[in-house]
Image 1 (cartoon, rainbow, N blue to C red):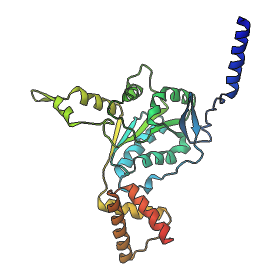
Image 2 (image 1 turned 45 degrees about the horizontal axis):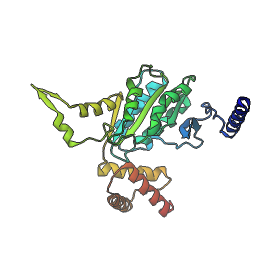
Image 3 (image 1 turned 120 degrees about the horizontal axis):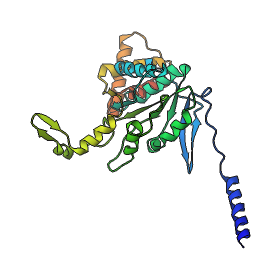
Image 4 (image 1 turned 180 degrees about the horizontal axis):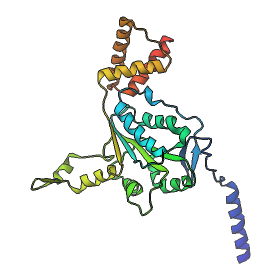
Length: 289
């Protein structure tokens, strides 16, 4: 009876092994410059990105100071010098994620690679790092639009990953993240009531300290701000040029484009690089330029 039962279990195990998907091979980073961390059921693996979104940082207008900061940090990294994890925060559509992609385009020929990870999978970062440790390439783990809702405790795993784990940080891996929130977590007015004054010193409450302690684990903060009108219009003409459009020096023609671009931004309630890019696509497409 026992032998029959064990035989049946063995047959079931063999059947499950046959229908289980095979283990995915790690991407060849000599061929691929970017990959995604994918989670499918119990299977977790790096999947190569075949068609990478190419981005040139020089196309981006109005973020020159931010460009210089992230470029300096990334260059230090690819040159095997000390560099920081980076948090890019601020207004939506101002070029945060585009600058990260631009660093890949600029430094991929010097061994830089990009790994895209969704927020809910950041707890897998130790597993990801283990797969990247035995290579000479330099990796930026990129998490776009990172933020945490009230009651979401997963940010504590991120804190440990960044600076608080017993294991040392991998020398060939940095984390770059973008967020619309400076401290990544929702902030409430009532939390200010926890602030205490001791003599001339200000002591923040535990709620505020907890939130600040997460963002502080990123060594480099880069802030982005809403575009002024002139910056927005400069971005419009820059993107028209990059998309193959033609704009003459005729003052009347340029004034017409500026008027249409401002109306476009007004309809969307935002002046940003993203809105400028969207207008330029529309303009070049309908003008046939």
